[in-house]
Image (cartoon, rainbow, N blue to C red):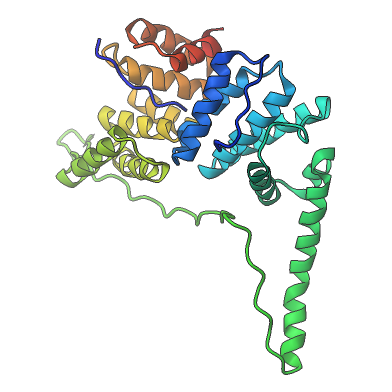
Length: 321
């Protein structure tokens, strides 16, 4: 069959080569770092997840890999993934105390600790000895910020000008505003009292075409998110359209939004045997969102027709055991 490129689910700075780490997983670490450098953070996160899987027996290497994975997940705003990676890093640190000696450039370490301070509660950080100093700094900063409004008010009351606010930490992500309810799809009543789905309009077809174009290119994360938004809009308006559901599912897969990818795949139904790539995407989405049995069943059907690659084989090992 025609060869297909599978889109793989950090910072390329002084990456080490660990003698005890399998060369395949060491190469994945480098690949994930290169993807991060190119700005393809979603692909970097997917690749680094597999790389870390192969370093379970090498705590020092694993700590460095998990640190890079957390940075990639932060870039795509994968809050749940970031929290899970921190939990794994904390478990490694509790058992082996290797974070301080992990092969991690100073720039990457500083960036990680900044994001940990932004995303992880101080009490949680304090429970890990390696991050207690970070918890102290976070609490001190919070205390200082809480005093600033009163101090500024006092200065204004004394006739002085209020001092400018302190610079906000870089890339602090605010919670998104609540989504406005989407209008129900228009339906047409039939003579029997049932409702017929509204046909996909030309404008919606254009959105789907634009989403496909973005997915087919070597797009950056921002463009992949745009593709997902375009596809999702049509899929939600036309839940009966298998084509729209599968397009939204593929777009969600490309940005590692596993639960949403699984939901759209389920709504559209399993792709046919003539679409083994989509079957593979569905298997990965189900596996990553917790449905290991469903993932295994679909992956078994897709494997005979897939163009094999290290990425495909790695997930086959994870899903099928």
